Amino acid sequence: MLISAVVDPSAFDRSYFDAPDYRLHAERFLSGVYSNGLVIVDAGGRLQQSLVNNIRSLPTQYGQRLGLRLAELLKKRGKRLIQCHSSPCNTTSDYTLIELAYHLKTTYNVDSLITSHRSTEELQSKGVPASDITSLSVYSESELERRRCWYMEEFPPIDQISISDFDEMIIRTVRFAEWLRFYDKQIGKGSNTSHFRKGIEYILKKWLKHGHFAKRGEGSVEIITCEKERMYEDESIFAQVSKQESNKQAFQKVMRELVEPLKKKFHRLIELRMKEDRDGIFHARHLETQSAIVLFDRGFDLFKPDGTLKRSIVKMDNGSYNHLKECRE
Image (tube, rainbow, N blue to C red):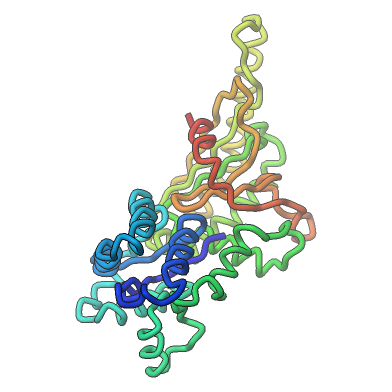
């Protein structure tokens, strides 16, 4: 669901902004990042600081809106700007900024390198494939922006795409995730746990194989669900005791049949949080990372018995941030 880019800071050099529509392309790019994009930066902070300096030095007529959008992205540091792990970046201190940017693009399999027109020509003269580069001067018509819009606005029900396209969608969502949270109300009932386990296991496999942080042993996993029985203050003591026992049994079953097998298979800390939901607000199912909130309308029971995908609407759902926070609390 996310697209990723490395930015050559020279793309935001003052000298380019007198060209017609250049500012609009720049604004479109930063707005897209805010929506469902990531900017990958080096551990030493060279690319980020140079980008910040270039945007802040723009004249007001060019830089005011760009500066505001940049400030929003910086506030979301760790969500939209991802600082790469230090170890692969330690040899880059002698690189120029454009060399550093391209190094990150290829090292981390990032979608594209955003450059200036001049840098585009320079890189292509050195044999860099055109498919690796997106010139900011034509960003709005680029393949990168088309792909971003497709994931954000046009992604179809998952049974209408190939399993390889579904794989890519999951990998895009979790590649730079520092942690994963699975929200599914139905898990807490303690039924169909093997089906839920299969869907969650599928996502965890992609995260551990492709995740920038997960491959290095970093990252946590939480499964957040509701108690099987809702408790009400005006119920009889007998009813409350009966529900408490039912909830306890459901919790133990979910731990035994879902959480413990996942812990054993992946050798990671996986926490189960079963929440009381007296107001009945916990319904929709989501996968959350620090960078994305993705709605799974039928939850993580994803597969038919034959291994094909069930019909499910899966889409970006950034607006549910506060709702999920309330569910956790």
